[in-house]
Image (cartoon, rainbow, N blue to C red; front, side, top):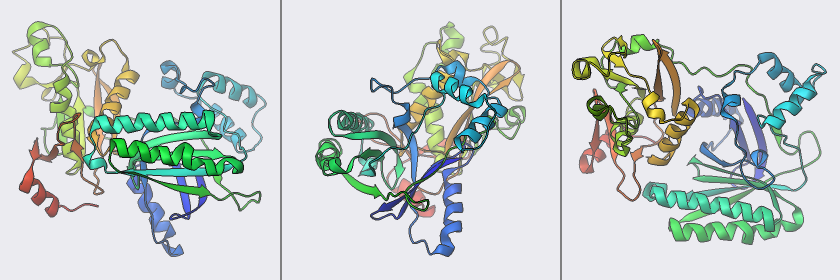
Length: 425
């Protein structure tokens, strides 16, 4: 785990920016933090969960674009010994002589980025909005506009080290940057006024709140940092063996889907694996929302009910191994010429754009192989923080709940009654 801690002026006295392991739910960290700080008479502990990193200043190239990484490098399992040497170097220790050269290599590959301390006033801007009423198109428009505002502020407003995060909690967007004292007053015109103007045109209400980080030269003043890489790759497999899961019947916490993007019934009859944009809506997106609004669960992509398709697709499914009650067709058809990294990024991007609010830290995706066939597993965490909706462009948001072995849309008084029976927030 890595963190940056800032003492700030304003509503919040301290802001902690934390990078959690994917298997650690944000709610668990928030609960542990609240418990630890309770003896110190903490009055307010608000959270902002990051769904998308839209701009992170160490990742910005000289031309202003965000650096992209070679997917093969990202997929490689890091050498634990090398990671420890780099961590020791970052913490000011005495690593092996080759650590400096190793660091230069990782920086040149883009896997690491230097974060030198610099002068100026660190500021954080929280943008709130009426996200439940916002369409996907409007949210995307504001996202693009905030990115433009930060880029322009760096080029013409004397602002540097800008970052932009989209998420949910005490705000919808979080902007960070640094400015020299002489340029601080210009923040109002270079960023704040423009954010207000963008929100008025898109959401009808987008309110920025600015926090200034205290600074100083003493050991007990200014921000505190700890930056460590994990010594081993985070586990992505489910705790329960996939064969055991596929032996179960679908229920409130388990749903099995054949594909995320391809109509497999059409493929079985025609042999053509053509993408169908309605499959995601009827399949994994609806199931995720339903489980988020109930008790969480597991969704598996890449398996078909044997009783339904075994005879119908006898020829085309002859190489699909049977595990429990399912035929494992795999997810290669979903790749559409891509690889797992690109496929999983596409799934995550769609989830964050189509589910409102974005289920930040509540949905993880991993890959497992069953008899040579890759399957995708969605692990949906149980939460009691807020309600979730499935939304498509300018259409009305839909409220789904997982009930038994099916996912149902609830509307009007029925939805109101369900929410009153299981209150959140």
